[in-house]
Length: 336
Image (cartoon, rainbow, N blue to C red; front, side, top):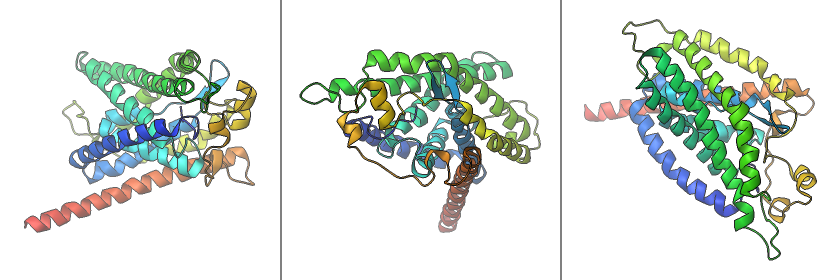
């Protein structure tokens, strides 16, 4: 679901980026009000879970691959606005450091995976959990919300791909960007997500949330509901994250590319030619392209990439939590 550069027109990228500026501003304002220093620092851990889930590629029908995102997971833990910020930062790390998702298409990818997915997923979670009492309602809400959320996000990506040949083509009618119309892009994206990726998203959301709630409930923004204070420890959460890092090379076992994420050469083989906008488009050299490092085996490079990504996300949000604390102290001193 990571849209590469040049598959969408600059106009499409620009519209999404402008829309996301307003979304980010709103979400940042809400996060500053809702999350204290502890929860803001934990948002880095939540972002790291999203980052790791996106590294676990799974085979999808049609010979493509896909992955979970964890947007609803973060939304249920810390709120949809926090999820939007967390997933956006994770996507930024993926694009800049690993070349996963385009630089120009960053706003589009954030719109789909950091905005649509967590807000839709969280809305459905609330709708179900408020009508089915107890933990069962919460789990059902998480599962259904995350399943629907990732599929709505996939539908958005399919529409963004599919409108390109109709809106942006040369005088002869040849597509300048993604060459596949809606009649191709929608079933190509939706069938695999409805059958497999959505299920993976639902299972991983419920499993990770249940684990974190058991080990470190005080780090979750939502009310526990038990009425009994419980001890929290991030040690089991860190162990789980370390285990996921070690297991990330399993994502290399899924063969094939995600639909719409081919390089120009592969697209030319599939479509018969490479659209001009893709052939002559923007290029960016990532620091560790495709989660690899020259001279290292693929599995080692993939695992090292997971370590780098997790470390960057945890550090970024730790620094932000410290900044927030400093601003709070300055405000308190000024009021005194």
